Amino acid sequence: MDALNKNIKKLRTLKGLSQTEFARIFDLSRANIGSYEEGRAQPKMDAAMKIANYFSISLDDFVNKELTVNDLLHFEAPENMEVPKTLLAASEDFTKIPFIKSEELSIYTSLGRAKNHILLPKSFDADLAWQHEGNHLSGSEGIEHQSILLLNAIEPQSIRHGSIHTILHEKRFITGICLLDGKTVHIRGMKEDNTLLTTEIEKIKKAWSLKSVLGQHSANYEYVFLKKRIEELEKTLQHVIESRKKVK
Image (cartoon, rainbow, N blue to C red; front, side, top):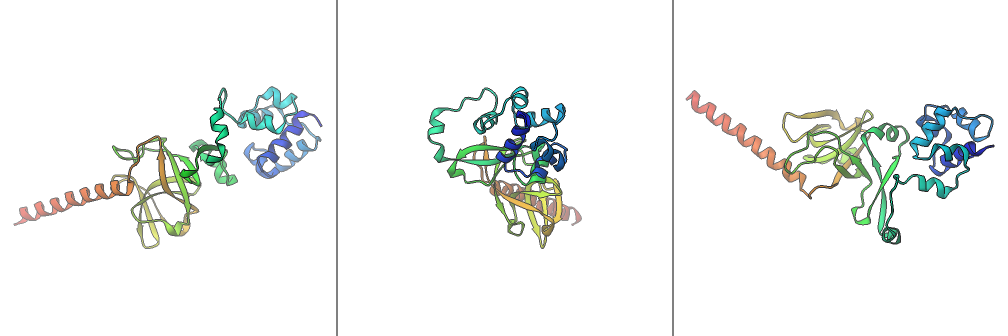
């Protein structure tokens, strides 16, 4: 068995993936992976390139050099990234939080795990970090496009009326203000007419509550929503009063 075959097995094992899970990422079959790991076949070069690129490994090293576990862990770091010694020394004060970008969502929904992690102080205590997509929550005190949301996992039945949540619905992540109506939840943006989704709570696969937003000022988003809602109701009430005056 040559270096490439050994590296595939070592990499898959290190990631805690079954042969089926590993194969699915690269549009291969479980039998393909089994034959590679047992040395009965060699992956085609385009398959080797996909695996190497996916895990940020040098293709030349991946194909020609039997890599150690330390090698594979090192290759995961972003290119040219230098980790400060002080950070390494204080690593017990930090925690790895699964991090999902929008383009990696399909991997998360199919495998149930994130490809990447971010390192944060343990005080953050989040279950998941998600790169928010869209401008429906933006504003002077809102959540901007591509902000990093720190989320805590909850049961869908625990979704709170008027709070911001992220849900997994039909292989999509949707973040918005949740309004409950019996067993139905309406998810909307900051504007009243900006409804993103209306669904039954029982159809929601997973749900998270918003803990904090990285890279922005701290804000009480429930207060922001309530303030906007009051403004909308005041405008509606004023319109009704003016209409009645005209009738008289």
